[in-house]
Length: 101
Image 1 (cartoon, rainbow, N blue to C red):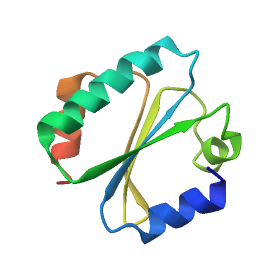
Image 2 (cartoon, one colour):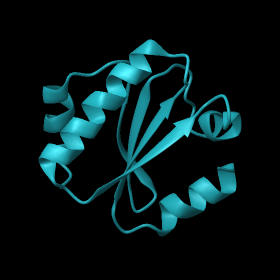
Image 3 (cartoon, helix red, strand yellow):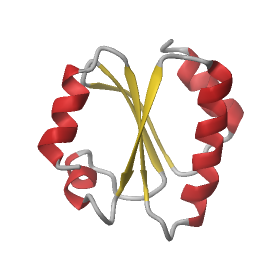
């Protein structure tokens, strides 16, 4: 996904969007992906998940200053409302997301 397209989608969306910056070779990213999926399923919250592979979308990662992965950014109406780099527990993610739904 191109940088402009990503930013356009984020700014036009009225719902929360959780962007997961990852790479296929990143083991912690694979662990976090499971945590994110389980948490979003259990919360049943109207949060859209977007996965951005940084190897295929270097510009998107650069435009949001993602310097390490895994990295999660939560957007609301195009604005960053929460972000976290590195692994996060399911409990921590649930607590963070509940504050926005």
